[in-house]
Length: 469
Image (cartoon, rainbow, N blue to C red; front, side, top):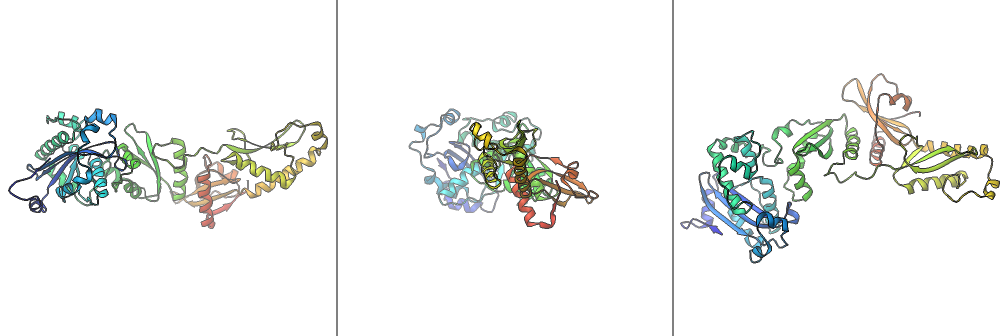
């Protein structure tokens, strides 16, 4: 349904208000929580001139896909109700003209705007409206309330709300809320919120401008927390403030981003001396905290290693086994096949017995024992194989600027694996990995960190210092 002033055509009315602050107060019902995979089932638009409603548009919409039962239970809108309703494409032109360049207002505006913008774009219409969120505006005009949901806010302010969870009813309540806020000094806040330099239009619902402006413009790792203060996303940045802002400055309909926007309640951070330190810390924190919205770097930690031990007959034996916490490993592997492939090559090159390396797991027979060479000569082959392997597994430190003038960042690779990192006093001499470890914190090794360190060392050879074991 659309209501227009009968004394003037629709286009004339739009042009009459184009240079004034006109507001399009909107509510939608949808089939789900993100625009890219869900449809709109109902939309209501109230055009407001700051004094009163001058136009109203409301219609059910056929979303072109089934409405989930839980949505029907919430809104009362079922598949039969929208069967004969227009598609969004059929009302897109009317909506485009109706919205014009008016200020787009909704309760939690980024949700409604993302849906309308996405579906308008799919129909060939671009929506580039300034946005105003009545949740944020309510916080500014009436700070300190326990809840700013539409229902709770209306009850608190004695604003009637009818036909709840239907576009027309919620939009009408948002109109009354907006008028109530205007009567209590909202105009000054609105002017500031609509400025181009303001972040009010793109920030997640539960964050304030200060949450972004107070972030450092330095390298580091940042954390997004949910309402229970649990970390739900970890990221790294060369410039923390700029990188965090980039998460929120686009109305991307991608479900991952939309869910993240709704759940971010707090941001914390840890400043690092360099980007490489931030890379290492980010990877470590993702594997430690397992945040819900980090999908990369969640591979299992390294699970296999090469071990050496002496058996009861005096033979030095090599074996690939699961990584043990308290048993020193010669080298580590992400996959069992990687370790076995390397051990087979060593056995072939240095003439090691496959049964003594557990490559061949059949029991030793009498003939096997009679044909084996004595332990002393066999053990020399094992030593030669391990010495060669050790030369191929470098030990070095990456040394870079620290957080302070009198310290240096040190990242240690020992026998080809990442050992840990920390800050060294300028007076510390760089001779052996053992000397450095007292200043460093141990970290879990993984392929992503190791590859990042090797790539950095190759690109910055002057910052790589070879060490003794």
